[in-house]
Amino acid sequence: MMSRHDVLRRDPAALLSRHAEHCEGYFASASPSHLLGISLTTGVCRNMFPSPGSTKLDETNAFDLAEVARANLGQLNAITVSSFCGPHGLIWGYDACPPAAGHRRLGDVARGAQRAEAFDLDGLLGAFAALTGPVGDPRFPFMPGSHVPAAMKSRTASEPGVLYAGLGIGIPEDRARSACLLMEDVGFVPGADDPDAHRAAALECLAQAVLEVGTNQRVRYREVFVGTAATVVGPGETGCALAMAPYFLLARDAVPAGGSLHDLTLEAWEEASRPALLRAPMNAPPRRHP
Image (cartoon, rainbow, N blue to C red; front, side, top):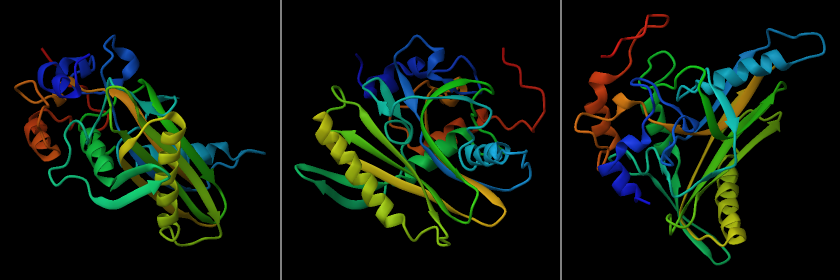
């Protein structure tokens, strides 16, 4: 098995989608290599579709808004899978195209014999959003209708309070033998009106939970990434909090000329791939490639 370094430098084709401009789900390739994207969002809508005895239409509307609130993950057939990224997986924004400034260190976290450095998840969230682009200004979005396996949890609420999603990621010391762990959490605090009031406690719980799973699974993590997204749900509204991490293949045009992602920072990748970005207006016919 090639290392992540070798896949990025010598065989980036192992990570590629069948499409020039679109990413797609990991199921679409016989190659074991794949990427993992990280998304953590919320969406809130006015209650508009109260069917008799049902709130599902408003809940679906809020979920769909959350899907496209940052990285564009709309129009997907998302398939919930368990939350591990193994030796064949590379994390976008960490293994491939990390931010030039690195990831913001939050401190250390400890639980029993486990010790790890803690980092802010926002760098990974921003990197994935830079890849897909927002829904109104696409870069390399997913092919509409793709079947995409994803580590995913969501929660909806239709009463006043604070709704949040959280995600913790454990990076093991030996990634050739152990998988990265994803711990998704979603919660609702009825009557609350400050989306940041419970953030510190939620982050601590996520970090501690990652280390506890490491103890259970006999895996030692060297780094833990944690983050939350929260929103206030008001009277007459429905909200959704969504943690979603798709396992995917990269749009072919997202690999810059020269054919390698090795050693590229996120900013260098954005500059190198800019000529190939999909910027077609909504409902325009697709570009044709030779």
